Image 1 (tube, rainbow, N blue to C red):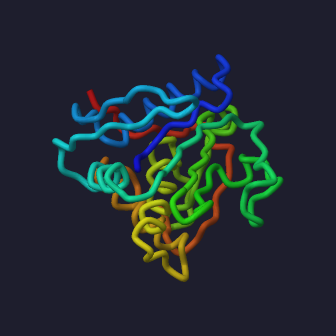
Image 2: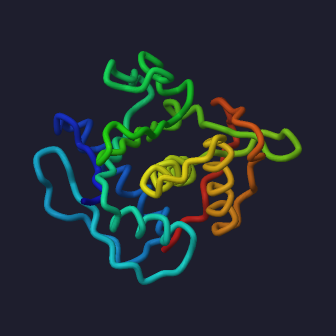
Length: 202
């Protein structure tokens, strides 16, 4: 079992989006040299990770790579509509309504989908504890969705799953010196002209 990047139908566009997912994962793991891409199997590229850096995000990814379930990450653009096979709460929804989603499709399969384009360059935001709009860049969005995956794997998803994921998200925000979001609200959207990205690792 493993963590994969899904290249879909392997069109040029999907391969380019897959490269963005790879870049987001690199930033999520803070350029840990133990992160590599394996040999592509059909549309799936497995992630190989021999953790050498310590930190919340590295521990998160390491646990997923070594889990007993398959976790498939699919990057999409702002025009993506969740298909009929998606859960009821997102089926038919445009990705920009939520930015990303994670669900357990079967006992051994978890899917993560997120918008790599930041709503076509309009930039997603969430709210801090004072109600101010703060940036929700790709690597942080991916950390949030992978937190859901982590709790699916461990069978300890809270009755308040968004609070749980947002609390984990704040652990990554703390790791990279980024403002914490208000974990008590799932409010957010897109349209943040002065959005910031996390500090890039070397």
